[in-house]
View 1 (cartoon, rainbow, N blue to C red):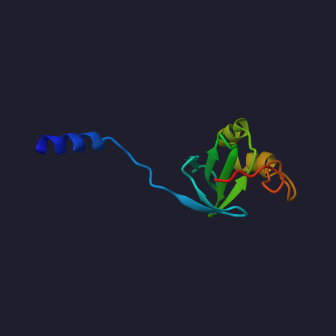
View 2: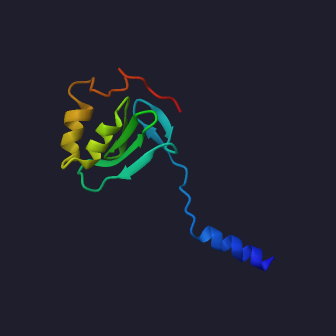
View 3: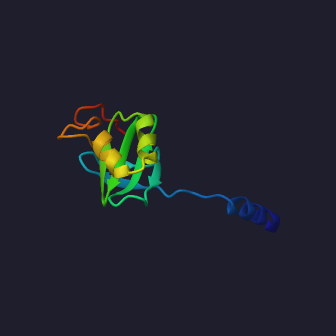
Length: 114
């Protein structure tokens, strides 16, 4: 029994488990981040985090303390956003867009349901 407990302890020592996380997204509601790949952002003054679900082309971005949704956002756009010299400038010019209907606004694009 002791050997079994030691084997289990040794097996679990290297395992890491991500805690389930649900966020509140403006204009969308509650969202479980389980299917998303999230990146914490430390090099921007107002973008704190970006989470992307490649299969649904759905991004949520945390601006200061509020999460905003973006629908039908291509993977290449998300990757360019993360790699941009100024994430804020890229976001404003290519994702948020101008006016109330940006290029990936969920009011004018297919909204995924989880």
